[in-house]
Amino acid sequence: MAQHTHARTRVCPDCDGFPVVAIDTGTRLADGTRSTLRVTCRRCKGTGTTVALAPVALGQRRTV
Image (tube, rainbow, N blue to C red):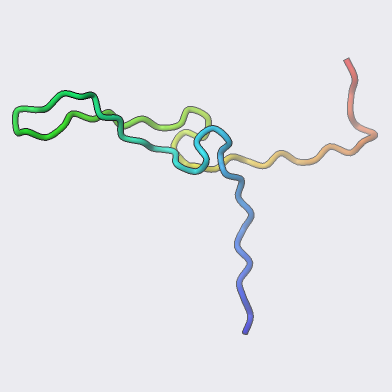
């Protein structure tokens, strides 16, 4: 049986694929629920993946 090949995606190195987290502030709201902050990864902007860079051929590298 044929298997599908999934597109290669690079997982963000900063968030390891978990781009959005909820941080508990320690306080409670008037209805008794906890106050949380929703924070997204700055590097991948909440997608969990990054763009793979194209490899550079050895003859094209520059030295500074």
